[in-house]
Amino acid sequence: SDSLLHCIIAVHVTYIDHKAYFVWFSKLISLVPSILSNIEKHTMQDSDIKNLTVLAVKEVLQSQYLDLTEPLKKGKVALKGWVQSLYELQQIIESMLKERELQIIKVQWQWVCIIRMFVEHVVLKNEEALIFFARRLEKYSSKKEELQAAGILKLIATILIGVNQGLQKGKIPNVKQQATIRESCWQFFLEVLSAFCFGEDIFIVDQQLVKNLLDAVFP
Image 1 (cartoon, rainbow, N blue to C red):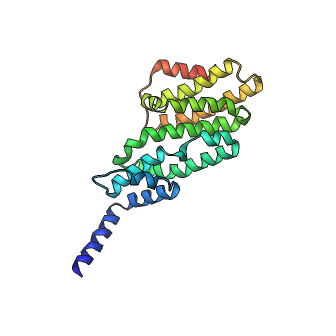
Image 2: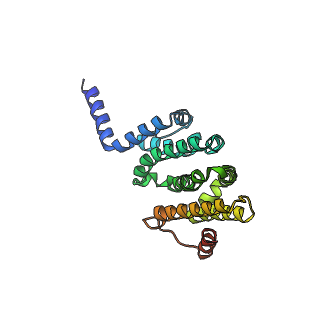
Image 3: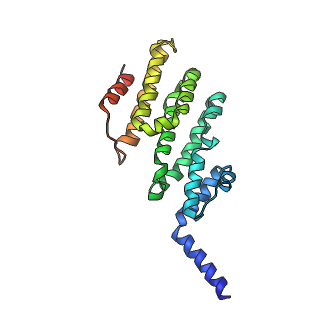
């Protein structure tokens, strides 16, 4: 009858107006189905598709899907799979960040991207030093909230200075391998600069932090 027709029209209009959110939500739960059970645990006064999508992406960023612990234990193949899964997620999240309501996840997502770049450019290219890097990545993960609050530059500096200090202490005795790791760190540094420092995300620079960072990259 008329009431059913009005209901169908209302649903259709809602979908058209918020189509992107329906698509993002669908892609997120397809990629990480486990987040559905966590979403169900939340009590939401307003469970429209925008709020559900924000909640879904927050759950993804806190999920085991992004946890590096197991891939680090399993080695190169597992780490490559972890990196690939992040590229799949990146396609979704970067389109989401164009929406004002979803800017709240930006800092968390930048953290994830920087760790992915470090794994891709440094860890995977120096698999024989995996234990050396695994210990540092575990250390960074334990300080996740602190480093997120400090900003991108602080995180980059913490990673590179930590690696440099480890090399100086002889954690990697092979000189040739040390040079390879330093070169990989340089590639990581350039990738991060390109992704976060020369676009719309240019940040206010702490000069001492930059000096420490450059000292790590150019010891």
